[in-house]
Length: 321
Image (cartoon, rainbow, N blue to C red):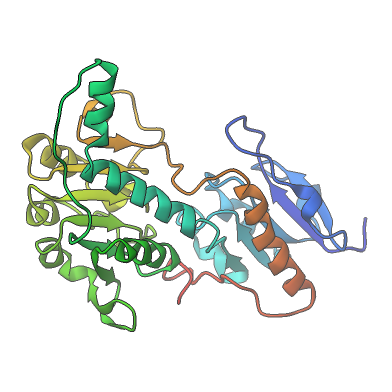
């Protein structure tokens, strides 16, 4: 057995997932690629587990089989699938920061497509129809961004640069030097009644599950547009479908869903006022190298016994800020 610290990299072969660029990991450690159920021999002596597959959800059985692991790193921002009582024995970190800009760009693209009626333009183009229309303006509209982490702030910053009046909504109220008052998520219905755009960029926790239902959607109103780049269960999907069908809200851009992949039977597929995106708002060409850089930077810190970045609070379900 090598005298170098053993790092397990969990990455099931999958044509839809880019393989981890393992060559970027320091030669000061022994890198052992493993499947979703590491063998006892693979686990023996392993101090670090790097979870490359963002869909992996069976961490507890692994932690119960070893008392040697000291650090688990997730190649994702959301870690709700990994939260378990067994995490008390290890440090959990995530890839916070990698997807901030790309997700913010996706939100801007979705919002602008809605405001400028690009869906209708594409439909008319396909039918070779020249039809003059007027569309809305994004400048001067009002948006509530739910989520005060790095992704939510990146979205809010870019909306504000396009002259959108932005309100932040978080777990706890407070004052922000850039965006003013942060409203508590318990006030979301009241906040929704005052805005045109509702952007959801929160991790999935007990407090954010079913956060947006009929009460919030009714308050948002017939001009309201919902964007969800956080987690699907934050929205009561049946209430959202009802609101879209009835015209209670104007439309939605959804990158995440209750069940993924979105079932073919879902009415969301065929709604003309809905954009369906397959949980890819953050992914961009080369993201796997940036994601690996977060891990290798932390690995260097771990090898030098320095404090790790992006440490998740398992009780909260995210990185405190």
